[in-house]
Image 1 (cartoon, rainbow, N blue to C red):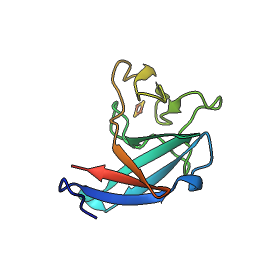
Image 2: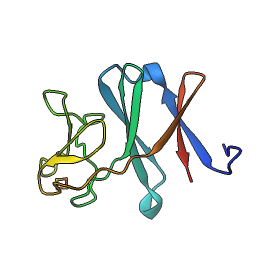
Image 3: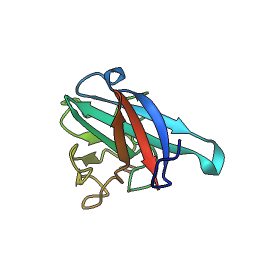
Image 4: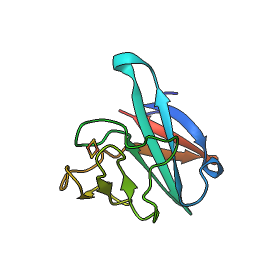
Length: 118
Ligand code: FES
């Protein structure tokens, strides 16, 4: 879908398909065109990030849809243990401390979550 500002939008899922307080990953394309993102939901707060650690560019999760620490209080990169603030993607500890996950633009429309790309 292309919106009125000529931006491409990709439907990810319905809001209720991400259980409260959890995140879900999405993959698109293959090879060099592969793109991975994940979306976190807590109540009405919905946040999305590129699923690429600023340390080495690998996906944060090893297991499907597991992006959080055991305490569910930060995102966790399973490769080398970096932790990121949920609200901003800022790296709190680990080898990429001071860097941030790249946020993605989301739009909620009729209960569905759309990823808006420039
Ligand atoms: S790749 Fe994420 S902490 Fe090293």
